[in-house]
Length: 358
Ligand SMILES: Nc1ncnc2c1ncn2[C@@H]1O[C@H](COP(=O)(O)OP(=O)(O)OP(=O)(O)O)[C@@H](O)[C@H]1O
Ligand SMILES: [Mg+2]
Image (cartoon, rainbow, N blue to C red; front, side, top):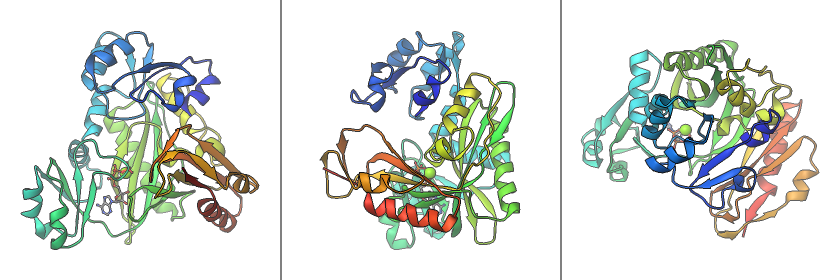
């Protein structure tokens, strides 16, 4: 999706990916290799003018070295490093006065068990958790046995009303623009975004608060690029930051069809130090992640494709992943509709109709 957007600016892409079948491999100058390997990243980066990321789990020592040699690396490697670990993220929030759930740092499962008085809590791996793998909700003391035996955090469980995200961009000149907040609805078991609605249905006061928090974070980080800020809105109307991601994000896919400027174009504008684009919403939208149907593994087949294509305002994005697995992200669908009730009905129809099987 970033490449699709870059074509409009005549940008040739080179991509490094550990998967030889990466969906982008036929759309760019493709390099197969490990993002976490110092020499691989150095060698790859040496031939680039500007280097950016779409996943945080990358060798930041190499990125720092490339930046030292004069390469433009955005987001900056020290920001990626801070975000790579949920522990340093939380410490940054606390030190910067950014509202977030109370937490303690834990080294292992034993330490989680010793802090049962902190329950109901959420135990998160410090590093390398994503898509909910690395997050464990510990409701009662009996759940303590599920604790991760690795360094991480134990965080107060928030009884939230809504989960929202604000995507914010900043260029080298210091210009900052936010996208309107979106509402995320998570899969109850997999902790993955299941539906997303834009705009978020919240009071203007809460929306302003969320917008101000996103701006403060990117400013305090001094970051150049695109930053997604995931937040909880509590039942009392308080906004708490859950976590941040310094890249195009799942909560911004709908901007391709629903906003004047997409998150991908905005990311490119920010790292190229171009004026940032207008983020206005054109129409209310919903986004449905297409996850591999449980019970199927193998060559992907798309059931119900034509049926959903008949629905007005539907746009299907398939990611070109050959193999489906239960809950693997295989694509997404954006639906736009001026009428919010009709939009929700269409989102449910897409969810129930388009299935990825093998
Ligand atoms: N403190 C909390 N209280 C209640 N629920 C929480 C809390 N922290 C996380 N969750 C739930 O777990 C989900 C996943 O948590 P988090 O975003 O920290 O993990 P992640 O694996 O990085 O997720 P992803 O990659 O999907 O963004 C959240 O979106 C939320 O639904
Ligand atoms: Mg998250």
